[in-house]
Image (tube, rainbow, N blue to C red):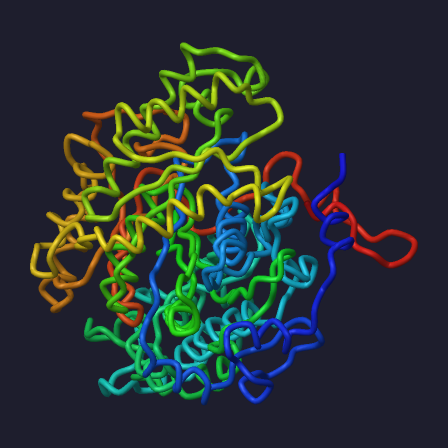
Length: 561
């Protein structure tokens, strides 16, 4: 079987200026990063902010499974297909993180004939945005430790309290050994000894800030608001209180600019930012999405993991912050994944089993119902695999039509490119043109924080209630008392289940959602709720993808699929 990387290398790459010209951009609008990648210039982004917006199409999915669903592949295939049928479309994606690339997932640039290129560069380092975010985050950590070492007074007039520092370090790699560490060990010249740890870069508040900031001034203002700990009198201290925001912004001057690339089908794609939807808000940058909306009739974007995480946060956080209104939501599903949610073993997903498929459709139904709560019309995209049967496809389409009252179109863009998603493109365009969306967030700003958490748990996960630890309850009260009760909430939860237990498949209901910790992301502008045993620094699986990635005798990267 031909691999994704072999298909990508066989594709024709066009000069990036030619791709930009398809949406009216000139060479002056680009800062080239080689022949096939460019950043949009600050002047171009500023000019685009004044232009009318096209229609926003959100691609999401059922709860992910080990069988794979192909959400990114479908996003790219739909963008190609919309261009193929004569509509102008741009694709807006997140940048891949090295953690999953070398961990469980491998490459994250789509698959088959629906990929963004050049796939090796995008998957590995790209334009250095993640490295800049890592550096800016860790610069703040170094400045905090320096302030502790010299007992420097903060803007509050008192030194930081080493016992109450909340800012950790980050690394763009899965490394469970770094979740909890001790710093300042050894001689007193190394600073006070204290316990801290690492998160993965995509979970960094700096990443969230970059993805939600509108421009450099907004970026710097948000960085200054980052809460880093307390002073010796217990007063909260921010990054701005130790004068770190200017240097952090200097490291992010280029990283805040969206990256323009192309799909195999020649569609322009903006790839920028990359927070995980299970531990952050899971969407690409506001800057990239806004630019795409000003350049095309349709912007096709994705939100991470299943609709219970990525799409919920897209609607309640990103759309709230940026004033976005999705016209259509596309929910990606596969027969294989639906059978997995119906109780099939991983080894049996290629075997036709009508009863198990019917049981698994409950997961798809839940996600379709949830999108309706946001007032967004839905189209379902069953992503075809070679092991699927015509009868299975017919079952899924009939369920969508007869039970859910939504259209569904079997998609074969992995093998066929744009023509394989043509029916989906016509359906999406027609639904968007009909202007039937009545978008609304799930909860108002003024709802108390604990009720926002309950609303998501009840309306999206179908939980009976939330179960706050005493520490989480205290943290909620503290942040409310400090004036942050108006913020939206960001659930950090396993993506594999509607519960906090990744092993519970399907569409369970009536459970309790355990919430163990509440964190404040004051610069990003949301509250984070850690559910169950979710970690903000993932670990590698027993056999990581890194074991199969390498370089051949000619210097070409292999195994990046």
